[in-house]
Image (cartoon, one colour):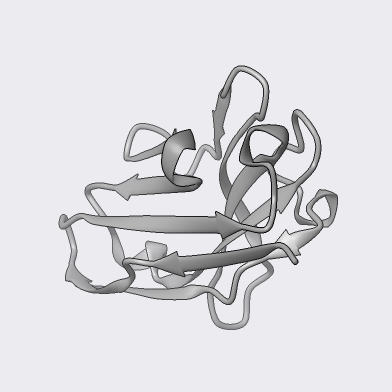
Length: 124
C-alpha cells in the first residue's frame, strides 16, 4: 500500500521559513513523480512544485518560484519543500502526491496517491 506522510508544517511570521517533508512508503520511489500542492480555505487546490522520477527535473508555480525549493533524498524515500520568505498568502494545507510516471506536472488529477496534508499558517 502506497503511503505518503507530510510533516513540518506550523505557524510562522511573514518572511520566515519552513521545510516540509513527504515520506513515502509502499512504492519504488525512483519510479514516481512527486508533487506538492496546497489548498487555502475557500480556494481550489493549487500545484506548487513537482519533481520528475527519471532525472529529478523540477517545476514551480509562478507564485512560489524563487522562494520555494523542492528536493529529494532517494535513500530516504523523502521529498522536501523548503519554503523561504513565506507570506500570508502562502497559508494553506500542503499536500504531497505521487504517481508512477516520469512527469505529472502541477495538475492534481494527474496524481494517484495523496498524503493527509500539513497546515502552514503565515501571520502578518
